[in-house]
Image (cartoon, rainbow, N blue to C red; front, side, top):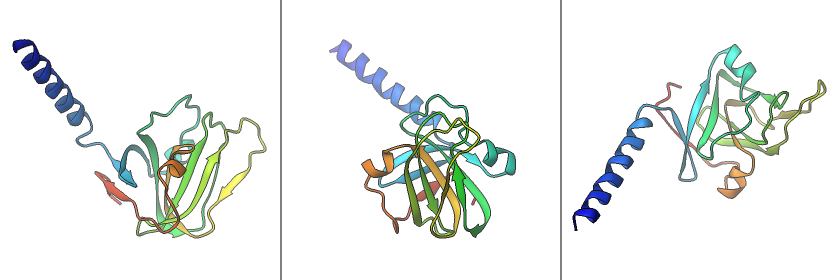
Length: 147
C-alpha cells in the first residue's frame, strides 16, 4: 500500500512540475492540441524564424506577429525540418495553410504566399495541421501572448 501511495504521489508531483514549467509560456491551441510557441514579433526574430533547427518537439511551434494584416509569403531557406505554415487573420481565423513546406538549403528557395491577407503566422511540424483536421475558417486560441 505504501509503495502504491509513493508512486501515485511521485506521479502527481511530476505532473504538477511539468504544468508549472509551461504556466507562463505562450501557447496556441489548434483543434484541442496546445502548442507552446516561441514569439517572433520583430524583424530579426521573424527573419530567423525556425532556421537551423534540426528538430521541433511535437508540441512546439513559432508564432509570428505582425503589426498589420496584409499579404504575406514565407520561405524555407536554411530551414532543416518540414513545416506547416498556417496564416491567420486579425481574428485568429485560418485563412491559408501550406502543408509540409520542405526544407531549402539553396539560394533559390520557393516562396509560400498566403492567398488572403494575414496578421499572424503559426509554424508547426509538417503534417500536424492535416493530422488535426485544421481547415480554412477554423479559429485558433492564443494564451499568454500580447497581440
